[in-house]
Image (cartoon, rainbow, N blue to C red; front, side):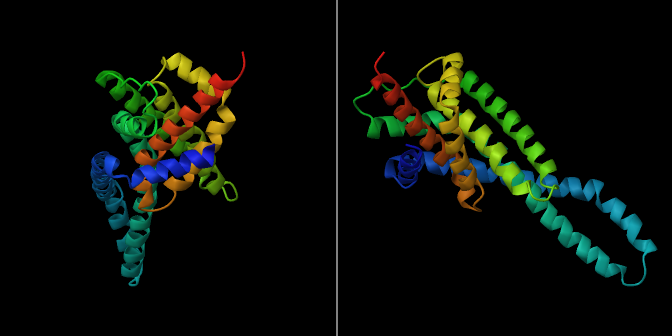
Length: 237
């Protein structure tokens, strides 16, 4: 079920019907990450560079090399920090574009079923901000664990697998039920959703492809929710 949902979501990425949503999601994601890059670079210039300039004059003649090395390390550090921002930024995009993605999938792949209801704009914005906060805090925790050898990579996958799986699934489920019912449904299928979240985290870890995470994750969870709902209805009561 999880693999099939991922396969169908991957197919949706290249579907002509999804092209408009893809360009909007990708464009806004790149715009936000570019703004973060320049913001982080400016913060480094304001707070870190004065400290380095005060430090280097007291070093020997070869200190110019130290400055070059420091600049390289700073650039790598900025890239790593920006990479950790990809998850919360894509999480925020989910709330803005999930309904558009879901409508394409429901119309094309489930035409015989009643379509879901789009969230009101303010609720969608609140959900996006809440999603951004939760995933941002989770990745801040993962950033601390990155300093601990042996569990750093596992921490990234476990934190993002749990949070992204939970939040994207609830987004998809809330098109058909109340937030409380969506949480209960997610809780009943928490193991399945966690493993689906691990696939999203793996997708998120691939450079460039991770920019498509909102499209891939939202599409995957729309399909997974449909599969879980169909299986639940098929069970005898």
